[in-house]
Length: 171
Image (tube, rainbow, N blue to C red):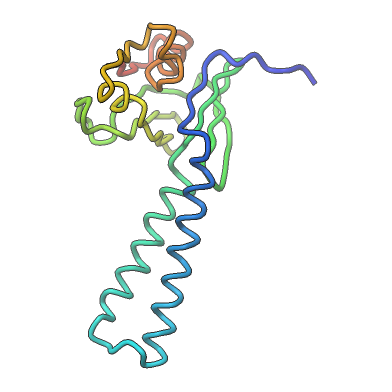
């Protein structure tokens, strides 16, 4: 098997995957304890709405945080490899249709999720935290600057070179 040449990559901080898995394991345990306490009579039925909303919140946020939000991307040999805490996959560069902020709001201060639109699949949702951290500490986040090549903008810049017809937002 031939080793793939990684053109660009993006990754959240080192232990992000373990942090998210641990947090949601704790949230699930708290949910089970709340349900057991409500069923056993230790909690009155008045905060039942809290127990239900807690469980709904854990399920919805867990779906996105564990299965949909990518914490690592790699661009290698015309393929985008993506990694979420509980699953991973790959998609051909030819299927990329562009990138945009989650709510089409182009502010450096509010967009922490980039959406990479794909032709035949659900879009990739990528958490972005490097951008605001660089501004907070007075560092440049110019995507063309060598020191910032771990930023998602550098990844999108490299992806755009392979897909000239797909618009990439690089602020």
